Length: 153
Image (cartoon, rainbow, N blue to C red):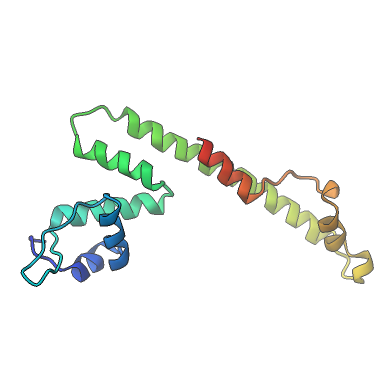
């Protein structure tokens, strides 16, 4: 990919949508590209590599600020990778917490569904348990609590 590749071609090559490429430029994850005489953005192989890095990082759930730090580390290749390791380990902890919460959710839903006698709503276990959280056997962390915890990390 030589310099002078149009935004649509870079989008196609990296899997990053055109509006998202523009957004990454606005927030400084991608440097502003040179423009043609007709004011069209042009990109090169390095830009495509950076966009692929950003896309993959987002797919793994890294936040924009974490990606900004990782890109900064990538730009200074002679530095220690300790900070990258800290960021990745923190993300791993978040993922493990979410998995644990989802497993508890799965177990609770299985218990509720298995307890359903397919009778009338007046004696429905699903309705009864949903109406009284005290009847839950598994602690399921609400999504908002997971988000709050991951923001603190």
